[in-house]
View (tube, helix red, strand yellow):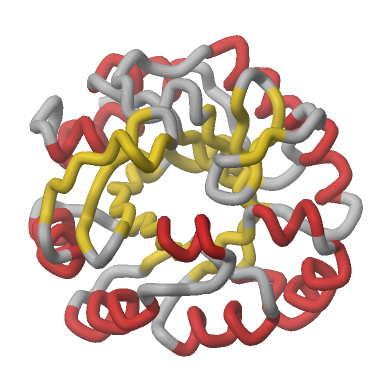
Length: 242
């Protein structure tokens, strides 16, 4: 499994939210590029970057940041936030994204999903975010009546094989994963997926490794490494059972 350091970009700065609330953001770096550089220098093998302004407003706002990061740093990036048209997806890939992450669009616009999957299948992930046990959209600001396994099954019927799963109720709290929830999502996924939401200690990462879920390919963490709860090297070692 791979540890994915997270960089969330809001108004041009690297921030972290608490439970996905935009009015509970903490600025950790003025420059997303400098945040990315620090993670790469610490040993990051992949970066997870979200354009929060794009997620909230429905179109990319910070592709210039993506271009700067991928131009200067030799590390692959998975990028999401506001990718709701084929043009936006193409622009993100041109700006250097190794993978693009669809969220709201994948759930609400199946024609778009089919188009993007038809053109870029191997580079597309879908983000499944939940609040109160139900799938949330529009940058976590709207909650549907849908259960995550149900949505995952529907998307797999349309060819999606890579997912990011986030429990927004735990995000930023550093309280760790709900392992029953983790196993429930693993049972639904027929490809691979990455867990996000509440990682706060190395022990939380060891729990994910110990679950021996063959389709769980990694974990995303942001606040914990910004606040020095563990290093990237320690986190990566935990996910590898070391």
